[in-house]
Length: 479
Image 1 (cartoon, rainbow, N blue to C red):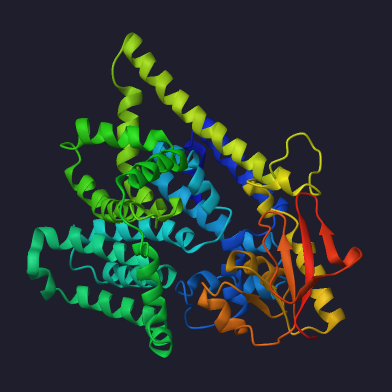
Image 2: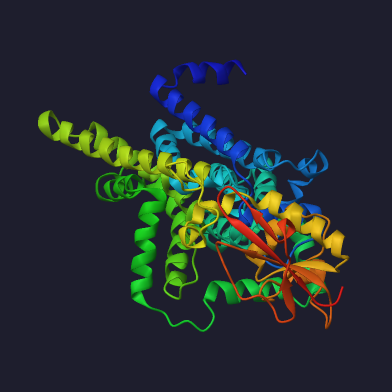
């Protein structure tokens, strides 16, 4: 503790202020916002304990179970991602202040500190596996390092299927100088055994469900029947620049051009962990099957190189050249900071800056993604009350992205996702049966034709008028 306090005293005041401001922003948003689509979906994992799930391994739900038992308030479900984000920031700061700055100025990494998704769990695990691999590359016989590597890789496998890239990165670094002789090291097999034991629940669940999760993930990542197009890769690359900022790319380019010969071991380590997932995601983006946060752990792995490159930019040159490079770095960093502030304000206000309510105007709501984080709790509770009033069998919405919020806030109501694209809801609640009665909810952000055999409920109970959007309720089937 004394050592940590001493290091904190040595942290530059400006960097300390940045960290405090961003932490305060996380707390403020965590208290303001309802759960997003993915947050609610993974929170439902905690409400439905299992060895694994249709679309992801189980750890993202397991870590939320204590907060579900303590009351499941929205802010409680933000404790784990905030702790993980803080630990990741601390680990990066231990390497360099520049790595921490790049992390703080990354919009996606900020979002992952607010919302718990599988990629959030991979952030500190990536750094920890990299540290263990670095140490093993220098002391291959250390049993404790191998044990911790097995535990870390096992936790990564319980977090997300792309956790396999951490095992691949470790293998690249450790096998490269030793070749097959590494197979004679007992610690390697100890780590493999520990990791296998950790991920056994995932294999048991898949064996019980016809390996459905593996098949779903392969089909989801492959983009289905979409043809591969280079313009999609270009678009995704531009999205990456917006999502993580231009400073990391600048630092990485400078490192590869100017510093690679000075830090060959660090370069091999970071590229082994960062390049494979980044390259594969870019390829999948060509089929329209990649989301911006899929590369979050890859960028974390590359941040040490980016930080060294950025530090070189800041310190190199003299006179006007040095001033110009510093102005460039500060300008790019300022743009990233402004984008984060603008994103936080838009999320917190629902995208309305003039204070007026446009809940009654569906046209005004179309295309505003920030209203997605508001009004769902009250609307879901109203839907649950209508189900009880009309004695229907279930609640229903058009797809799983709507079902996640309705199922979370309307617990313990049975919720049907009528599109059938996410089998997890079918596993939890079953499928719509012929003649089954249900309350169908229509959201103003995604207005759709109601199912056949439905009538809109009259009076105040037929509509929920929220601050940012509205919800209509229909009685369907034969109650």
